[in-house]
Image (cartoon, helix red, strand yellow):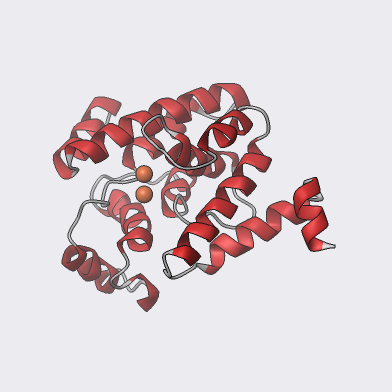
Length: 196
Ligand SMILES: [Fe+2]
Ligand SMILES: [Fe+2]
């Protein structure tokens, strides 16, 4: 399926606002991919499809969670399930079998330890695309174009704080992603002082 056909699949399934977000994520992912020398085509495909199931009803997502035998933690949790379900749907219904693309979609919400470059790009693009607004976003945008690992760390911190504030389920992969980046980078000063 070519890019235009994929965009059409997404456009049909998403609400206008989410579709707009998706296109902005794609643009962001293309910019970051050029900077960090990631495969442009994979970045584009993953970005276009990352939120394919985000506007599905909770009932629909729950039925996919059961059909695909996903863990119960994904039941009644759209923020977590839409990523895992989309990663499975694109294989089952759109015949996409590229493992890197599938993983970038599956982990775009939580992150995970040892993320690939494409996974980092999709995770960050989702958070910094031009329609996003939250405290610290300008700093995060700037960092994304200077040091992708530090930007991922900042984005994961933001996600963890947000999830705790909202009293939502914190996925273990998000914690593992954060700790893994800190170990691999030796931590930035702020994190070092907190960890020592
Ligand atoms: Fe998403
Ligand atoms: Fe998204």
